Length: 338
Image 1 (tube, rainbow, N blue to C red):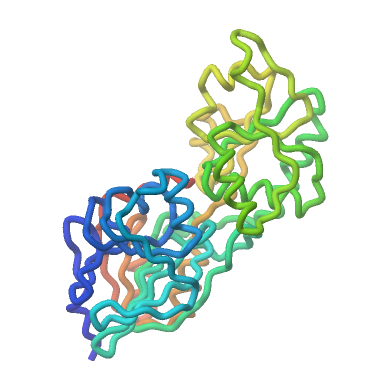
Image 2: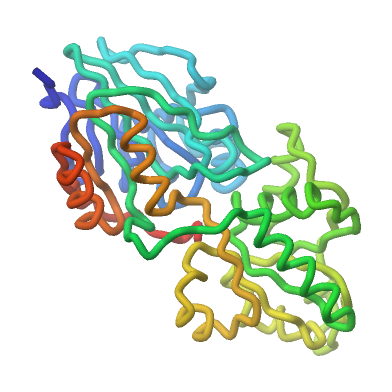
């Protein structure tokens, strides 16, 4: 018999009862186990934070060194115990330091995958398949319509556009943690060696990635914004900026930029049109429909719990596979990383 009575949903999120610890809590708690550094999962204000060394460093960059009274760094596949609950953090493939939380208690193994992906990413450890009794999956792109192309093919589109319009700069909207560094690394892997310009908001996180051995090549903070009311020409250069900066005065100072957006949502053409995107790049840091189903099959769990995203379709697919499935309907987790 599978005993899941020790893992419950509280107002703060998933709660491991015997360990008195929450996973990615949405409000301040005594003990928080954090899957990764995106702001909707990693919040400041907890007394004790347990996470991978990379995630702890990311939180320090975003919230300051004193973001928690106590911090416990747990390396991948290092086993620790909290009040009789065996915990292991295993790679999730989402961003640098991202981890699935594997919990073992009462002869039952539950894995909370957090956000994850299965496609290639040179900036983080790849997703690790681990068999379990209960698998908790996200469903951000949990609909059959979402089938993401390879990131390498999308990067080729980016390089082709740069060659087609050498007189224009290419500004790429990409989330500051994970997506930006992944695009830079993919460009390098494709042979692009020139300096890549980045928005100032990305500087510290890019430096952090480099400190963990991720090769990003020559980067330079953009001169945009340093000279008031003057347009800047960065013709034939790549510029990465947070999506929130794309429509601001900062971006308007670029001379005739070609607007690109890198997101799994760029598969939805209407989203690209609404954002004034000329080149939509379907590069996602989340698993698509096929990869979610593949993962569910590979972990061989008899129960699947579905968190934030398109829950109904995943639950139906699990039922068709003969698996017990239910929606957790957790709130407070967004798709900001897309």
